Amino acid sequence: MNTKRGSSGRGRVAGLPEWDRCGVMGVVNVTPDSFSDGGRWFDTTAAVKRGLDLVVQGADLVDVGGESTRPGAPRVDEEEELRRVVPVVRGLASEGVTVSVDTMRASVAARAVAAGAMLVNDVSGGLADPGMIGAVAAAEVPFVVMHWRGFSAGMNSLAVYDDVVAEVTAELRDRLDAVVAGGIAPERLVVDPGLGFAKNADHDLALVAHLPALRALGFPLLVAASRKRFLGRVLAGADAAPPPARERDAATAAVSAIAAHQGAWAVRVHEVRATADAVRVARAVEGAL
Ligand code: PMM
Image (cartoon, rainbow, N blue to C red):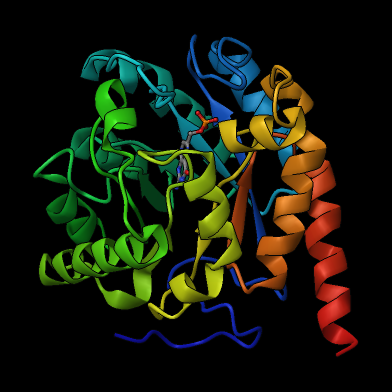
């Protein structure tokens, strides 16, 4: 399968703005318990303000989520997820922000799109809710297909691979086929390796090292390394304790530069400013080739 390539060679996603470089997706987690920023933007007004601040810092789009997917996290119930997410999506969309909704539930995706979301980011790639693919197809919005093997509560035990790059690529190819067969137009798809989801630090590093293999699937690529455990391990070295999530933003920006340089369509980050600089540097370097 192949989608039309944008002028930058990163692919373009029908229905979303096009940038002349790797895009920056800022994260607003409206949750009490996300591993990296849980509790900070739990109130609607604070969450909308955070999203607007991220745009000022250089975010091209803002991803709003109401369910923590940190390893071991329990699921949030549907009513609570709707209560968290929909007003924030509405508030940001009404200010002209390009909003994506991070959800595994079809009902939340549909309500968020009605409130103005332009992209559905489902970390399960449509596997968690059998209604998701039909809902996104009917809404005619773009869809992120992330590599996923199971819910957060048990995902660490699923981090078993002989060849992580080959297996993640093959599993994503199957999901992309299923999503297209379910009615979502190929030109609306984005693919994501799902760093940290049923993957250990070595798996994550191998995937970052081999992003061109994922690009070869023929879809725009989203990379979400921000503050994740593998960066904690890299920064800690062999024996030391990893630094807390909020001290991993410089390392996140380094991955953003690598991903941008390898042709990622966008990177998803909690702190936007350094990554906005990183993708601009990558763009300038490409321009000098
Ligand atoms: N990771 C998290 C949440 N949403 N969405 C996509 N597409 N890819 C990811 O890797 C991803 C995601 C978990 O991180 P967070 O809890 O810090 O937001």
